[in-house]
Length: 311
Image (cartoon, rainbow, N blue to C red; front, side, top):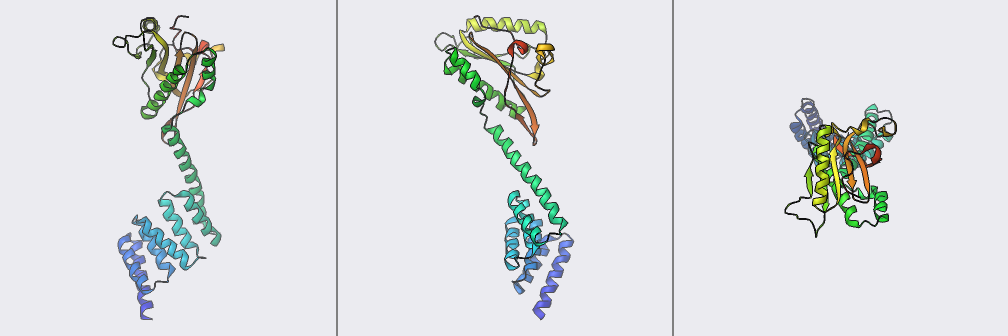
């Protein structure tokens, strides 16, 4: 009887410290009480709550499991387990625990709120993981099958396709990291003919889109550069927000823009045999910038720069 009174006293003391926010002292008192009454599920449940507040999550989970084993029909053990698993961000496992708690105590509004909250958190976490996966595993080749077929029909070799894919993927990765890409033209140079000491595979064109005048000067320069460098193909990458001229998303009639107001960037490919253009929109999701799938454009309606290669 004396031990029982001591256990009650220790538990009550622990509860008082718990209510006062002294979780370390509360846990110590619950531990003393458990030594005197090791089969009491309430003590393990209380200590689990104290450990949870101390962020000693493994200890809290162990005590919640012990609570359940000592009284499998008591909803509180499952509730404690659910709270610990929630803190561990193991949302699906937490949901399972709260659902069992609800089976034992269907009237609990606290458990119902937890289930509703955890259901949403689980969905959000899965989507956040999907977004992170999309950001870190950029694979644009699968979206360019039609373009690849066009190249094959014109007997253009695989190197050109790889050049376009690499250029686009590098741009997407840059956008994911900085929400921006540099306005540049990437050239696929002829390995045998190009004087690589004189001609680089990248030309900055950040001033090209300020006015019709700078735009015209840039196009003239690029046309001559393509000839002098013996380039086989070129890829322009330019962010939409860097273009003052030409604002190709403001056309009317057949040139009307049909792709929303999203931020993003243009990719315009050209070789002597083929021209193709894409817009890669971006948006913010789960606090992350995410590029969407490339949208093929009608280059005759939305070209950012005119043709630079001779037929």
